[in-house]
Structure formats: C-alpha cells, structure tokens
Length: 150
Image (cartoon, rainbow, N blue to C red; front, top):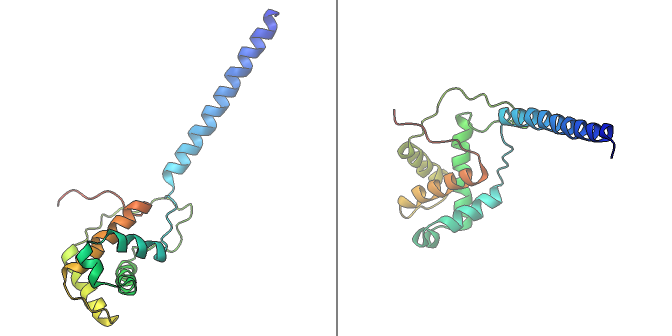
C-alpha cells in the first residue's frame, strides 16, 4: 500500500471520529437540558399501586376505590400546578423546591375519598396508597430527588 493511501485512511478515520464526537456531545447536552418524557397512564398506575399495596389494604380497597384515590391525588397535584400541561421537549425550569407534607396530603385524600364515595375502613390504607403512588411516579421517572431537610 502506498504511503499516501495510508495517510488518507488515517485522516478519514480521525475525521469520522471527530464528527461523531461533536454530534454525540451536542445531543447529550441538548437531552440533558430537556425534561424526560414521562407518560402517566391511569390504568397502569392503578395496577401498579394495587399490586404494591400490603395484603390487608388490598383486601379493603377495590380497584375502583384505588382509582378514585389516585384521581384525588392527581387533583391535589394539579391544584398546586405540579401537573404541567406541555412537557414535550420543555427545558427544566423548576427553580423553587417543593416540600410535600405527607400528613396534610393524607388528610386531603381522606376528605377526597369521602367526596368520591370511597369508604376508607382504616386510615393507614390512604397512606399505603400514597406511598405506592409515589413509587409509581418514581418508577416512571416523574419525580426528582428528595430535598435536604430544612
């Protein structure tokens, strides 16, 4: 092989590598700045939560009751503007931390259960539903890290 051919071959390989590195780096930076595409599907959430509940809670709540509690939780989130309307390729712009007091949220959900006709036999069932629902959010990538104690 002539020397000129080897030089062109090496230059071609280096050029391809540099172009690929620039494109991959640019896309990685763009994707890092964009919120991940998280899709909340109520039917999947109901099944996930129902399967994650302790056996005692599963015995006391039907799937329709779990669905009603999840809808109440989603309404609570929407009332606090925590359910964004347009998130496709949206830059992450949350700059104020949110602290959720689970005691107040459970009390809200108990009240919501009464409004939705869900008979909660044991208050701890609501706590289990909230924990499982938050686990579903974490599983689909819809929550960020826990905040440091304030």
